[in-house]
Length: 62
Image (cartoon, rainbow, N blue to C red; front, side, top):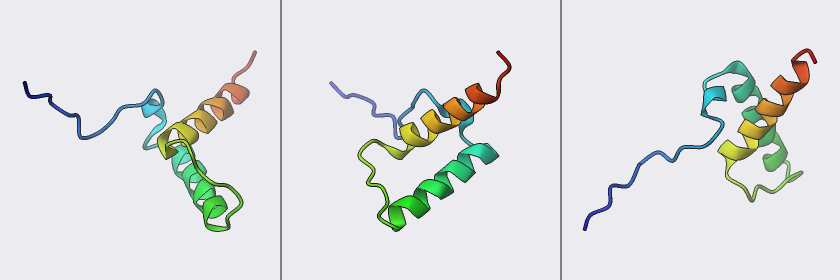
């Protein structure tokens, strides 16, 4: 039995990809990793996506 493998794994933050916010958060993480300020254990998509989600939620009126 052959199993089709999705070449691109999905994640719950896809709606934030290709946004300016995503690009900026990704760049900041690049700098932190390069400077050895942080070490990534979780996949980058989940880190960037979670930060984008929380920043957007913080801007929403309550």
